[in-house]
Amino acid sequence: MDYIALNVLCADEEQAGILTAELADYPFESFETVDGVLKAYIPQERLTDCREQVDGLLARYGVVGSYVFIEAQNWNAPWERDFPAVGVEGRLLIRAPFHEAASAGGMEVVVMPRMSFGTGHHATTWLMARAVLDLGVAGRRGLDMGSGTGVLAIVAAKCGAAHVDAVDIDDWADGSCRENIAANGVAEQITPLLGDVRCIAGRSYDFILANINRNILLADMPAYAAALTPGGDLLMSGFLEQDVPAITGAAAKLGLTPVAVETRDGWMLVHVKKVS
Image (cartoon, rainbow, N blue to C red; front, side, top):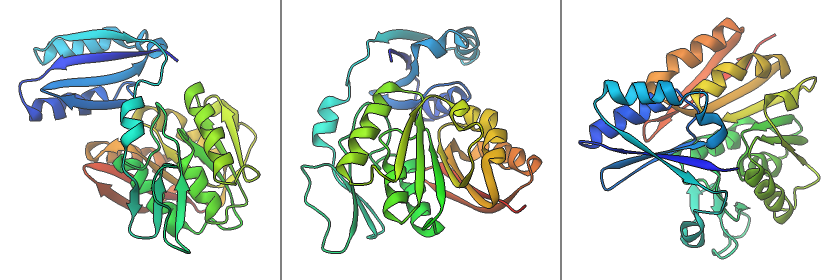
């Protein structure tokens, strides 16, 4: 998949933060600020539908954005080679094959990071991984929506989930997920699916993990609710604090009961349950 990087020179960190929050309403998949330049990454095919609105947003803030085409490639490769292992409260180690293994008896997920999220470094992945550890997924069927490298599906499988579907629209992510589930010995428990929410039509799950972004969560939440079994859990992340009312409000309209709201580094996780 080819990407576009939107580069915006910001006056300060506060402006970069505000623009990040505003742009999160569109299908941008990741953000970073380097030397005062906000970089927002979006699949090329998805920019077409929102470029006019994005340009209007930038104009309202008095800033100009430049769009840079990024041909499909592993453009995170230098970082991937050097990224550190990630610990989750001493209960889980997310590491690359070249890192030291977890201590005897410790749970670990070995991932070879690719272009997509899923190494555990992003606050939302960390939040979701910790939540899975406490969710009680043993013997239950689950869905990892927007699975990236497959790390959350792998955590669920290692926590005893009966089966997990891992869905992602990105072919790089799908290939990475397949590689990682095989490397972690959980291929029989996880089924990677390349596509969007239409992949889950007619399927049912006892728990759903959706670490994507606000707009996709709001658009796809009815499908998640329909796929959840009674008593099922829906964990959502990938959005900021100001987005929580929209997420919880949409969940309430679907009859989903709030369980918990958690935060890490400004990013949020919302846990709701389908009572009946």
